[in-house]
Amino acid sequence: MLPIPLDRLSNAAPPEASRRRLAGAELRLKRSNEVIDRAHSIRSKYGQELGWPELLKLLEDRSCIPFPCEVRFDPDPLLPYECAFSVPRGNEPGDGYTIFVHPACASELSHVPYLVLYQIALLALGAHATPEEAEAFGAAALGLEKDEYCRALCALADQLGGDELF
Image (cartoon, rainbow, N blue to C red; front, side):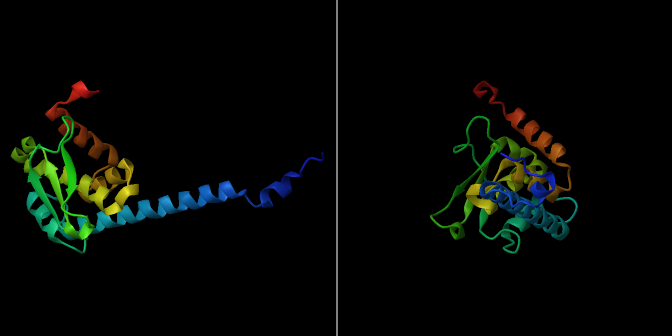
């Protein structure tokens, strides 16, 4: 068997599996950019400090969030380690969602946007949403570095306990 000259390898078309991986990577990059753009538009519209009053306005803004959402401070659907969890109100996204937030967070309303933005990202991106995308969205909407946002989420979860599950 004759070796293939190196100059021919660089011009060779990638195998089908490689093409699919490249297409998938391009789609993920495009989606990540869209997630960040959406978060930046929220930050631009609602200001540098997204607190509780701004969060309530954001939840009503269909140009930013395409479905109705409400925050309810209720631990019933939460697992011991969860700070927040979203539950659909019906069979269609247009029916809206209830974002359940641990009642311990009600005493520090400035922390609630951290939790709710994560849930909004998961809802907006659908079944294929990744934690990384939700973290990037929340961080960008709050004007934080992703690591700083993640540390804040972990600190909130640590305040609630639930370590016995790990």
